[in-house]
Image (cartoon, rainbow, N blue to C red; front, side, top):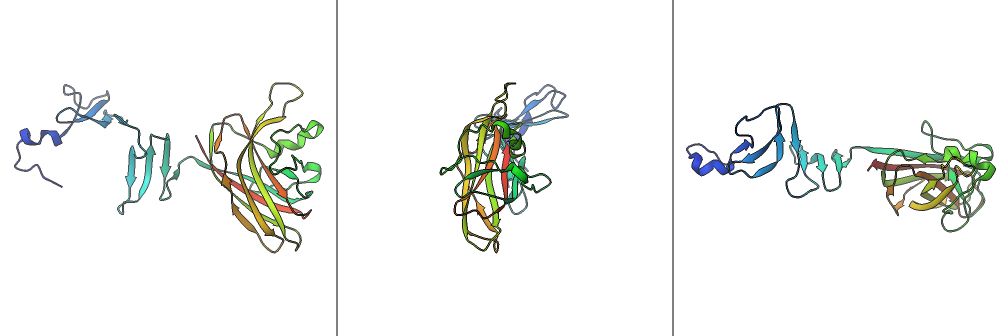
Length: 262
């Protein structure tokens, strides 16, 4: 790095930084930091505030902090309105949503709602197995009629816009017979109009899906799902479905969904 020692200000003023307010200097009002010829930087300061705002272009590295080895540990991405942290540069507002079922009793080829986990694990009990289609994917609508009450614990209501970053499921069954297990993650519009159709689901959109093969009680299969659509809007609900494609072996399942607030 060069030195200004012995150099005239007339020859070095372009490399000097100053605040734009040349009358008051740093004061209670924010003032842009400029170079000696008046070119604005992305930084402005006052006696109490520091502000970073791009002058021309948003970038993924508008603000970045690195450790001594050069690894980024904090990055502000103004192109995507994101703040990322740690050596993995994970979104700072990353959260986990978990669905879980224990001894879910299936009919082969049928998609069943999986409860949202509470305190890390949820047991599916009694008549709460709710089917939603027998096609390749779950149905995109659901009207539970007089079983709609069993749906309450199977839905996650999005209180803000969300982006799905990934989903992983762990699955086993209760016999030695190998089976194929399919998992789907969906978002829906849920009716909330104050009438008798409240709780009905429509506009189902596939968010993620995955498949585990050769599943039996001697193994726990771990599968990272593929993301089909990542955007979930505030007010939509997220549901998870599991299908035993092969037989009626009871399903033991946990699904972890990684997301961040958009």
